[in-house]
Image 1 (spheres, rainbow, N blue to C red):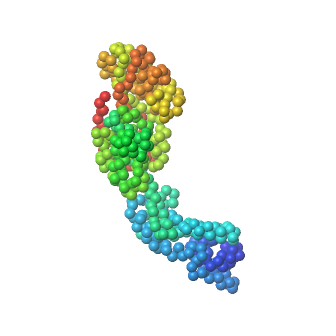
Image 2: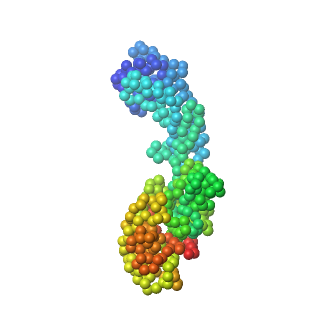
Image 3: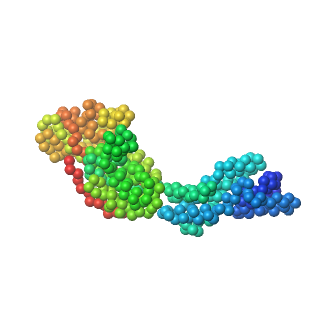
Length: 426
């Protein structure tokens, strides 16, 4: 008799007398006696008892599992059919078991004071996975599976939980009439109403939808989410190399899409996409937490005749200048009313006419550039208008550059040719 049995002989006798099948009997000692399956453990327990003159056979139908293990070949076939219908590098099997079985199992653990049982779900997961593996030809992954096949053992149904894919890259926005992300209607919050003409959103499209809808078509996913490294105003353009972003696709049936094709199909007159590459989930938080300097070009209109030299001198005076910005009035309904310290790294001026000029400037991340120019009724101090002595407003804004460099761990694994950039009109 094995030591692990003799040390638990009273519990073994009681459990065998319950009429459990070999698998369920062995599973009650599933974490001892390595290198064997639970049905082997169960037979060893029964044989050890028989050697002592106690013949305690299994019932025709196991009172605990109710014969669910006999259905494993069918479950495995259903798993293989479902998993083989989607693209992944790996998979994992999970199960949903009749709650009364789980409760009855726990009651036996407590009744016999068991110290090393394995749960029925754990055994089903493992054994169904072993049967399905030769039919799937992909490795099992426990830590981060791309596909989890969930078997409902009550009905034999299999549902797939597919891990999302994350596509990082940069986008250019050439239109001054679309937002970065879907903008739900303020009146109906996406349900559809007369205010939004039944569309549920405030704008016809967005950068998110332009690439996200194409990605859904290519992946067979169910939903897209857009995570940008900040955002420009709707009436601003994003030029240069573009703004970093991560596109998240839920439940993708096709994971291995051609990112060159995605960039080409999504790019057009309103937006363009470059440097697409697959990323990990961590990229979302990294992008959202990044503090990258930004370079802008703005067209400024002054309330009066412009003195070119005064504008140039004012621009130069903001070299490495710290400013304090109270939350602008235009966003105070959705942002906390705080005073934020920002740095203007440099400003240059050109393209003068009688009452206007262009400014190019580099600022800290999070700087409200329009308010830096106008002063926002004194909420930004110091500001360009006050120092120039003429009230100024921004009539057009372009983001020219975002100073962010991708870490090596998320360096592009696909290298689409960079699409030609074209300047937006002011």
